[in-house]
Image (cartoon, rainbow, N blue to C red):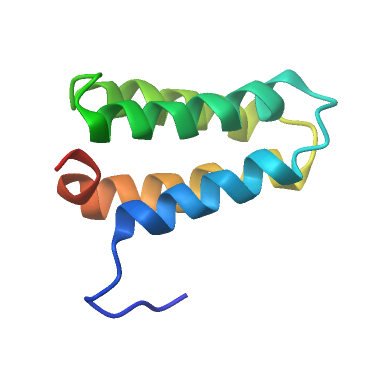
Length: 94
C-alpha cells in the first residue's frame, strides 16, 4: 500500500491491528491474544502510559506470533507492524 504524507502512520497501524483483532478466529492463543496486546500496547505508548521502549517488547511479541500462529492471518500481523514501527516509530510515540 502507498500512503501520502498526510496520513498518520499510527492511525494506519491502529486500523490494521483493529482489523486483525476482529478477523482472528480465536482458535490459537498467539493470534487471539497477540493481536489484542499489540493494539493495546501501541495505544498505551501513544497515550504515554507505557515507555517508548515498550515497542521493542511488542516487536518480540509479533515475532513470536509469526512463528506460533496456526494460520496466515496470525503469521502476517508482524509484517505491517514491524514495517511501521521500524520506519515511523516517532509517529507512534508522539
